[in-house]
Image (cartoon, one colour):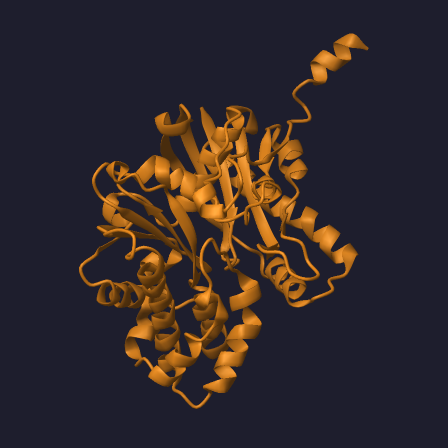
Length: 390
């Protein structure tokens, strides 16, 4: 059957839209990517999201409107992909939408409960395209005592786990996260956690220093030198000292954090700032492996996905820091780094479609496996039936 996955991450680059064919479920799942596009976030909408993220007390009318504005953005992405492939929503079994994370509180505090909020009203997609929509994938895991993230490990276990080799799937989006797939013969369960910043801090620095949205190919970082005083300061971040399961986001590594770092080290050359921030991302990945993987098992290879897979400086730093471990990208295996997470939500949606749990408790810390996602039904599906009974 055909299905579509939507993903909008912390970097706000755009709406990743994957049209896939998927058959089976669980370990028998087979998925083929038919088409993939990233549709740009309109600048005014990106600014509105960022403004609300910066505001500790966002206005309720703005927040409520944003939910529907993002729903329209995601619906437009679905429409463009359908039109491109000469299809309609009736050709799809479902759309699986991650939504846009506005706030994620993975752990209880003195005043806040563990909770999460993703916006992008699924009813808009369902109504516009006459299709069932699965959304709000994180909340049931949190209800079951988990952190609601990361969710991608389920799809990675299905697609990448090997019998005799331990594989790490390292995503470098706005945030870095890793899924460890121990060899099936090892007896170790799959587990995962956020390694720390991915592209988020680098991208914000590029915006402020170069008026560019990202460091294309890592060219700026490759032209600079790593400043070790700045690096030492960055590595004092409290998130890096936490044990897993753990997740992070814009709350820890967003615009305010980047501003404080750039102000503190404003005397450095621009290219050295970018080089150091890029090395910081690589170093946080390597340190997390030293803390949470290497003491348990040998790591045979790392597969890099997400936008960071295109950053040659980051890949070079990782190969240097992970000496003895094969470091590959999704493209090296014939896959798409950019499409990986949108495809993952097709897999998660497929499990929900079949009434099967898809959280990995070793990744999220949930008490039990649970079925993820809320279903918004195609509102047009039973129109003729209802009219016939009137």
